[in-house]
Length: 172
Image (cartoon, rainbow, N blue to C red; front, top):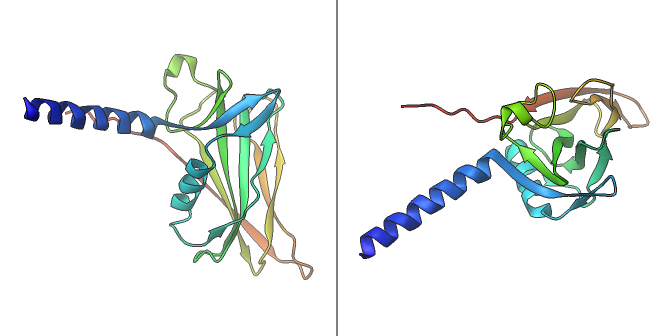
């Protein structure tokens, strides 16, 4: 009997872990604004994207899309081994719950056109130590247009890198 209970606990943990990998709730949409309720989860996700090097800034900045179905959360970064100075992630609003999504739960009812997962943006300076992002939301596009802009007094160039979070199911 103990073995059966232990096996059920392991199966339940694996099933729960699989669900957590598809989407991670970060907060809620309240009156068209993002209320972050899982700051720890957001920070852990972003630190993983940074290769676990550097320090995330204390303040989380957010931008909302014109239709309030997407949010962009971004933070300043210091001490990253790849010299990333800003990191951002696109969040999906699904029934007023805001997630980092790996895949649409139901591709027919995907949160946006062509969505395959949350997009992560990073800005790296050459030789700029303070790259910031400039965000515009073009009509008809799921992802915002992001520009990395150097804020150093002497100028510099900032490079944008984009990655997509997705999950692949392999049948055996």
